[in-house]
Image (cartoon, rainbow, N blue to C red):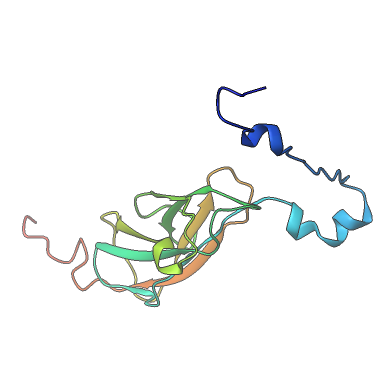
Length: 159
């Protein structure tokens, strides 16, 4: 018998075999290798070393710690500045941490912040807050000093 297509095709020769391993949450193997099986959102950390702000408009660099992959999922963060009492003193920037590259240099973000027109004390501590939009992770707070040479109320030419 002659085949029209000229012989046996790949689908007629190879049979795919799928191996499936069921694992329950309460099993010992799952508990031992929990970090391997559980998916967690990627985290974002502050990369800029300078913790002193000297201008009303400034930029900071952030680093996505892990690449999005097998057990790491993308996350969205809101980043802003607060004073010691938790009042917001800057605009809110959004970081969508969804980089899949294994190269760490490609997983950086740059955000520009605008401080509100307030009088800032150079002795007070202000905080950069990195908050997960879904609220699944703890807030990250980094202390900063704000030392602006010409504050808002120093030059009042109209009084």
